Length: 336
Image (cartoon, rainbow, N blue to C red; front, side, top):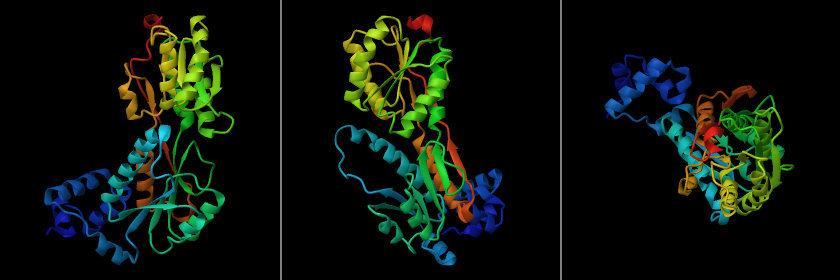
């Protein structure tokens, strides 16, 4: 079987560099990292994760930690299982390329987190922890990275986050650049959900005048009700484009527009948010914002494996959502 020294000889690097390439890839130059990975593939080399954990006197395990949830969600909640799959696959891809193993863990109370002590070398927390959960994480004495949607406050802990303000902004810029000047935003529970607030603010700031706001309920039914409210405004020429807070709510909005004989994009352009796979079932390709959930969790895993979260350093992995143009938005000259 090929050894680490075999990979080092083929890649023309030191054995220590091969070790760093699997344990802390950001500490290796891109050229050397590419040579090590190419040599490892050529030789079919896989690091001995058990031996590595013994040398480090650790568990050799990284935990992906999440709050316990309904194992069989129903209704609209099932749609978001795609995001869970993106999270797990992205973290697994990074961990598999390292000397660590991945363990999926869930908890119902902070004591469940404390019970992980001695059993993990690091943790990726799949949400923003509460104060008591954060204290439990800190008590473990191992590096950890948390995830959140929206920019975190300054200071520790290490965090990978999706810039939701920029997500709303990129949707607004896309529609404005296509000549739309009478925008509307459909959202839900705006007063209580920070993510919705950030998407709305980013979208509103992209225009010279504040867009029309309809704050109803999230989900397909909520979107339908909000869509029905905006139909007469489109007919009167008060609205020429709509940004909907998420794809699921956008489905309901589109259903209401179709029921009201509003043509997309001829009468109004529309954009959603999340880029979830179910939008491929629509009669036209929806313009949406890719939340890049996998990129955020892949970044969290890389930060953790590089051990950059040690010592309370202020470390951030900022992920910018991207517009995914579709047929539901068009230049005003073509849409009108």
